[in-house]
Length: 318
Image (cartoon, rainbow, N blue to C red; front, side, top):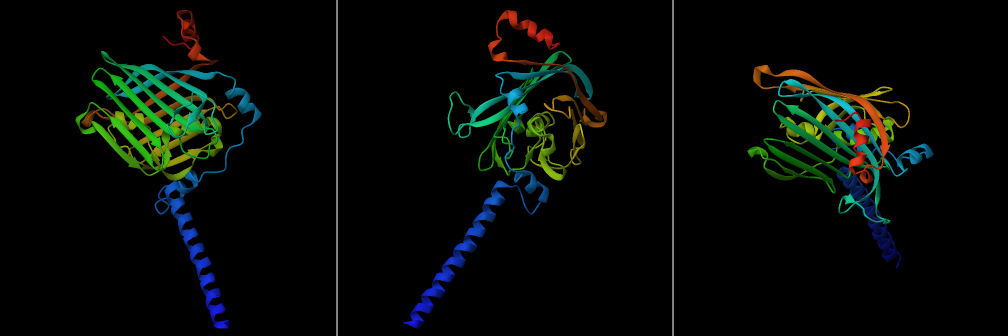
């Protein structure tokens, strides 16, 4: 009986140890899935495992949950085809409820809805006779402890139009369409890492939470499409001082700097983006610049009558 009891005890202990080991391995596996390339870059782990949920201040709630969007207009100097083009840019920030599975705006209150800060960023400029219209949308959880749930980008000009969408599920799921032969219709997945697009919304929630140091970042969908660069993560160096956040991509020879108000609501005052523009020997490093003109708060979705066009004038938009 004693020997049988000892054997049972040994089996029981072995079972517990096996369960513990399996549990640890499963945890590591989960971390590897939810972070991005632990072995490749430790900073990426810190940015994905980011931090705990951001506690929203009463100031934040009063500003962002007043039933209005924040609309800011900018004077744009856009580098394109080796020259600087004059135009306008608009950043529209607004809070919404988001459906995590369908990944669209929720029409009704639901316990599964995810509160997000949405950014619609538009640019309009001309290249000679024909116009460019660009729009990027970012849907970023207000909890500020995970990546954007969705990012999309569309570009229209007289040669044709292109569209790309990133959905945050088990991986980043990419769907892309273009009139260029080599970029026609694509579907592929990317491992999760920092998205340049999401940093603009993260800044508005808490600038101090922005990732810094050596890390991998997926450049904006606008940049990758305009420059015909593969949509993937590139090595980058990010830095933050009191009022400027900068990212440098050595491989792309590109630097983005965003200047913002260091006090709440951390509004974006200007940005600069330097990269090589033009073709062949005529290509030079040029700098796209955007400088804020005006900010208003408005429930713009209700302002769609002809008489509301005066609000565009208040934003100093044509």
